[in-house]
Image (cartoon, rainbow, N blue to C red; front, side):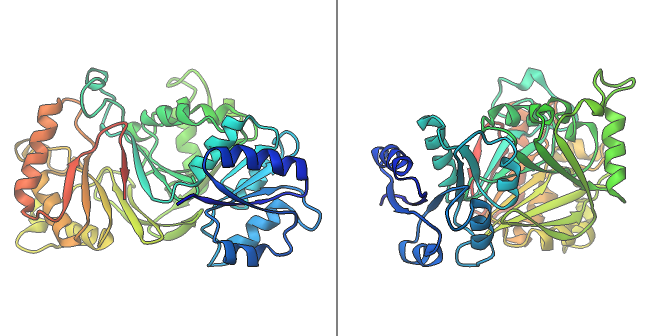
Amino acid sequence: MDKKILLIDSDSEQRKNIVRVLETHGYAVKTMETTNALERATRVEHPDLILCNMMLPDSDGVTVCRRLGSDAQTRCIPIILLSEEDCDGQNLLAMEAGATAHLAMFSAAEELLQSVQTALVDRVFAEVWGCRGSIPAPERATGRYGGNTTCITVLMPGGHRIILDAGTGLRLFGNSVHATPPLLFHLCLSHFHWDHIQGIPFFKHLYVPNNEIIIYGPADSDEAIYERMQGQMGSDYFPISIDALQSSVRYVAIGEKSFDILNARVSTLRANHPGPTVLYRVDVGDKSVVFAPDNEIPPPSTDPELADVARRVADFAQGADLLIHDCMYSAASYESHRGWGHTAGAALAAVAAEAQVQRVLLFHHSPDDDDGAVEAIHDEFRTALRDDTIGSEPAREGVCYAL
């Protein structure tokens, strides 16, 4: 069945041009000249996407976004706003109002189509940009699981993303984003160990004027996050100081709490790891992903019944569609690394079974482990799990997992 698009534009010639491009590529387009009957149209037509001019005789695109976003029946419909001139100065306003994208009216047809295709994503995906722990492993880059350190993006209906961690995989993600700036990014840090923040200085969108990035992390204050970032850049450790960033960066300190980002509900849980560290749960509609990149589940807490750390994590991950969890060690290597903040397969299996998750991605692979060693750890996990209803595999860089 063709995807249905509702186009709101008072300029008849522009409407014809857009309709021609979209219908040529198989989309069904319904047009309106004003927003007077917008609410009724969305309920009658049930569009999969709305394209709306920023300036209309009776309203404007930002107001449209806010009106539809405040209604439970329409808030999940993605909206692309169109301007009749350059996007500068209006893009962040549009994104903050809930727009999926903001394009110049005379953008190339390819850019319009790409934005439409992205906006019409109707599932939730977890995209892996890096899944190594501790330090990048370039010697593993050509292997099955990749060599970059931890970075995941959650791709939601409407094309919005939440970034989880900023290891060297963040550079790959940044290089994949070709949308017209200024742009808005939400980055959730599990903690501030090097392998989880190494990608920040190489995230090219931080050097674009008027871009905005909101960085969330476990700290006592917003200022404390800024100070941690400042300490990693400039001085003796990096050739460029944090003052070189040209985008607007806002820091948000979090503890154990729940809050909203875009159309997702984000919850955090304190992890069992050296230094302030949190796990994230992202709920989008009826889909959920739990991100636990660094967390030690001690074997005693899973035998004979779950207790302490294991119980807290199992409750937090209960019923999740996807659990992405640290499983850095084999049973043998764990014995010499107790207290280092990482987990072995059998303990993770006990938690996954108790939480009744749908799928598990073993994460934070050791830089010293080749493909065979990573797969051997997964074999230990499967042997301990003894539940064929739960899917699992080692996380792989470059793979997009559907929830």
